[in-house]
Amino acid sequence: MTDDYLAVVQLHAAYVAAVDAGDWDAWCNLFTDDCCYRLVPRENHDRGLPLATLSFESKGMLRDRAYGIRETLFHDPYYQRHVIGLPLIRGRDAGRIRTETNYAVFRTKLSEPTTVFNVGRYLDEIVRTPDGLRFAVRLAIYDSELIPNSIIYPI
Amino acid sequence: MTDDYLAVVQLHAAYVAAVDAGDWDAWCNLFTDDCCYRLVPRENHDRGLPLATLSFESKGMLRDRAYGIRETLFHDPYYQRHVIGLPLIRGRDAGRIRTETNYAVFRTKLSEPTTVFNVGRYLDEIVRTPDGLRFAVRLAIYDSELIPNSIIYPI
Amino acid sequence: MTDDYLAVVQLHAAYVAAVDAGDWDAWCNLFTDDCCYRLVPRENHDRGLPLATLSFESKGMLRDRAYGIRETLFHDPYYQRHVIGLPLIRGRDAGRIRTETNYAVFRTKLSEPTTVFNVGRYLDEIVRTPDGLRFAVRLAIYDSELIPNSIIYPI
Image 1 (spheres, rainbow over the protein chains, first blue to last red):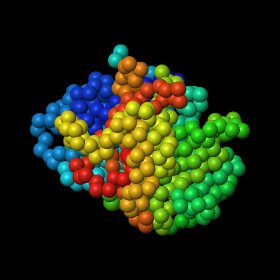
Image 2: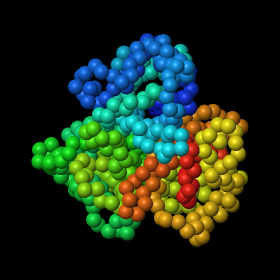
Image 3: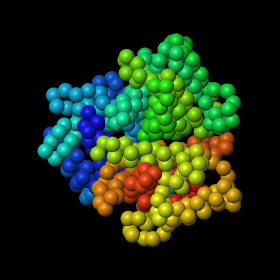
Image 4: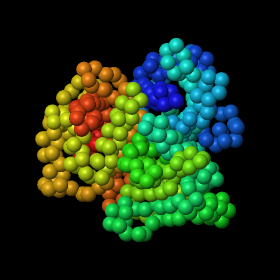
């Protein structure tokens, strides 16, 4: 179990490093081909409402977002910095490790002080692949009811 | 030792998940029957002064607070989100594992941006019970000298 | 590996506890004699520019800073609180463990609310010594392009 936990921790840490470095290829590669990534307000998640701020349903859609970020989206540049807590093992079934992990994301814009951008929790389903552990499902459920009008990068 | 550390980490992570979900029954159940929970300003802790913002000295008092939160306290609703660091093992004696863990708690009120609410460190004494590890003592020592006038939920 | 990882985690946690307690002797002792500690803006690090906000190149220089903090620097007192994420193992070579770890530092001044002070990542090189793991190199690379005019304590 502790070897498994270390691998889970390394997957989470690799995700954070990839996203905060803006290394979108590395980010995509932490997911399975038929993955699901969704960024959802807590209110909607708690009520079972389907609206999501971001929703990608395959690695292809992640790659499309990565392309968009690099090539087509016009936006103020900003840095993200994730600090995540300790993953809680929620269970294992059918080869999947389910974890819950709190996160805070800070944003730094050019010549502005750093602010709290988005906080919430990840609900993940993690599977073993020949390349190591990967996210089959990653839900990022955030607390604020204000919909940020400028979520460009994944959380 | 690493198995023990994993169990300590899971206890901390379960605490955070319970509190941020507002699952007060789960929160109470992470403590021993004769537990002590105190929320204390750093100044008072450092000087040995007894004043605490919250102080509960048994699981019964925790349950009373949980009842109060659900039934009797009038307050603006808000979400809490804890992000905690890596527990430092401070020692073991008489069957107790003593840990120190930094935390940040973010607060989100309806239609307001998320803010930094309370930061500090937990000083814990953790014991083994038939149900797994539990908090015998949890001190939450916070940095701000401003006493928040609206700490409704435990930190 | 997991025993090693636990030792790495404890080193990180001990650092945070020492710095946030203002225990500068303990802080110095977490480094090797010929250590390197640098606090660098992300822009400069990414472009290979040498300018650093703080730069110490031996344990003697750390001790000098510690002396300065205690005896000679005039400044508004403030508390720091670090919350760090999960260390990512970047590699091992020549007896060094290289890790990358995100951090957020919160600052609390007397009678003011807590604010986000500095966020970024640590790039570390950790070595085994007779006294346990120690930092041979610690780079703290922070996101904000605003140079804080009041970084008194190490990050």
